[in-house]
Image 1 (cartoon, one colour):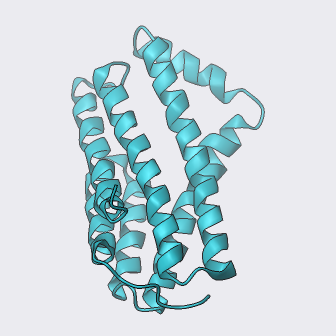
Image 2 (cartoon, rainbow, N blue to C red; image 1 turned 90 degrees about the vertical axis):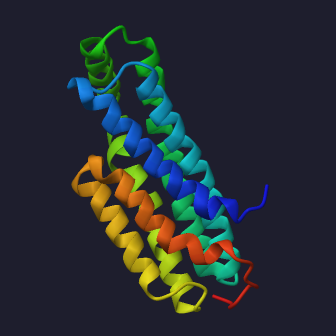
Amino acid sequence: MDKRIAFFGAPLLVSVYGLVRIADGFDGERGPGLAWTTGHLAFLGALALFGVVLWEARRLAGGGTFATGTTVVGFVGIMFAMAQFGIDIVIGSLATDHADMAGMFQDVRTVPGLDLAVYDAGPPLFYLGLLVAVVHLAAVRAVPAWSPVAVVFGVLASMVELDLLPLAGLLMLAAFAPLARPVPSLARA
């Protein structure tokens, strides 16, 4: 696979997840069912591709301790976000209806430490790593100065309202599109 595909694929899969999520809510509830599972699988794919994005951002920034640390933080966040989405998929697959699903989530969230790590503190590390990586790339002129701004607005949009995920994906697509072209390694961090 051409690694540059990840710069397009990851943000587009965020938008796909957002659109499927919106469609899943047309009946007033989200999940369980095909739309729930499909949307969550799309976001798992996005997270996997964002792993490639972070690794390539590290390379384009010249490697080094700072870029590597940023990548590790992002990878840890991806791991926790993947755990969250994996739990969501399993619960969505086992639940018979929305009320059953809500009860299962309540049970999962009572596991000591799981709620904090997998739902609250862990996944934001992905966004932190991603943002710092893009700022670093802007500093070494691998992306335009507006790319980090687009990532910030994309992350903020998804935090304000999950129905804005399609927009968040498009903003991230704009931020990462300059990286889809071949660029040599630029700097040492």
